[in-house]
Amino acid sequence: MHLAFKPKAIRQLEVLPKAARQRILRKISWYITQPDPLAFATHLSGYNAYRFRIGHHRVIFDFENDTVTVLLVVGREGAYKNL
Image (cartoon, rainbow, N blue to C red; front, side, top):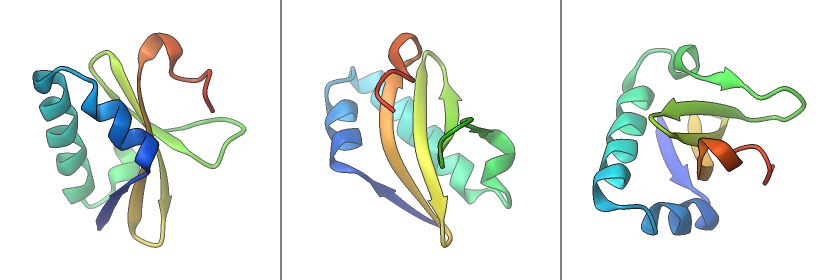
């Protein structure tokens, strides 16, 4: 399983406090090492994307060809406005 980040997701991670950023990256790494990472995700209706819920943040990602591509890392209150 591979992990990739879109530039926007990297920028969103960079502005988060260090503790939140580390928690999110650690949890994403744990998810993708599992046999079925989609078992921990929710499919977003109307989009070809999924989300992980990590505390107050939502990690919106695409899963294709054994690669998880993180599209957005946002707070729960604005998570679905930018899709």
